[in-house]
Amino acid sequence: MRVSVDQHKCIASGQCVLRVPEVFDQREEDGIVVLLNDNPPAELREAASQAAAICPAWAITVTES
Image (cartoon, rainbow, N blue to C red; front, side, top):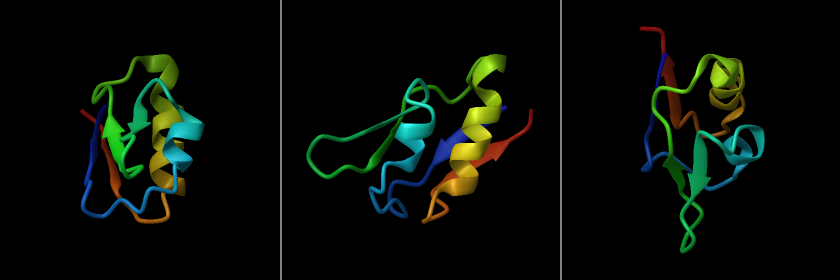
């Protein structure tokens, strides 16, 4: 699994960070998503997929490798 983010699409809602803080964070100055781990371990993959699904801006992409 690979996770990527488009910071230009992000609206800083923080839903991804609330869902899986081991994979996502937010910049202090504006709340835009920061990707911490583009290849999360197996136990976080479902949560990362859910974070992508609930992102209101569709700024997170998950692809299976």
